[in-house]
Image (cartoon, rainbow, N blue to C red):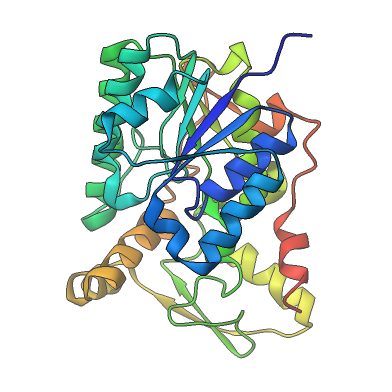
Amino acid sequence: MAEKSKILVIGATGYIGKFLVEAAAEQGHQTFALVRETAVQNPSKEKLVESFKASGVTIIYGHLHDHEILVKAVKQVDVVISAVDYQNILDQSKILEAIKEAGHVKRFIPSEFGNDADRTHAVGPAKTLLAEKAKVRRAIEAHGIPYTYIISGCFAGYFLPTLAQPGGTAPPREKVIILGDGNPKAVYNCEQDIATYTIKTGDDPRTVNKSLYITPPHNVHSFNNLVGLWEKKIDKILEKIYVPEEHVLKQMEEAPAPQKRMFSIFHSVFIKGDQTNFEIEASFGHEASELYPDVKYTTVDQYLHQFV
């Protein structure tokens, strides 16, 4: 059996980054985590870093703009995974510079983890963000760096605990707001499963210069179907309030920045169906649960059960 790749996760203490670090260590990879020194001043992140160390992860203190440390980190690994947040997408150019200087990285996985940046009908802030991700893609390809793009759909932890209800703190028990007609399908994946699939691509020649779409069949649902699953669990029919597309766009225009971004993402996912309105073709990608049938992923139905 070939030796497992050494993996570096950049943005290791972020929302999806921590799951990637944990998955890499669990799958037996020698794992490195790039962590800002200021991060450990936060008690929760300090505890997270200590848990990384306990799992055998090597901590490298530094940041994207410290070229010397970044190159030193990249030189120690075979696979580089970026989990930088949406505010730092274009700063991944610094990672590309370090990878080019190191000269031996066999795979770069940029920070995607959402919709496909090349197949979108997004508007507003979501359109801007996806355009930045597409710009990073073109730079990777221009540099000739081997890559895999991870298209994860919705993070279950963001969407399912409230059924994507604005301002909600729990799934609805009386009435539910549905954007558009509720028919376009979206994908909801547990963060640990996203990380597990991502790490598996690093040593898989089938995923070189391809996109991995994490769309396991039990996690693809229209919003109407999602509501139906929840209604069965609580044995109750909810009042349904449908919001037309033009009202969603108006709300987006009038909302402050954080809500504007949320509405633009919801518009893309729930009204335009951007996660499922195209066919996955072997020329550009593979579906994760077909490629890795051994992964026992958490289904939407299982995930919702904890909130009953």
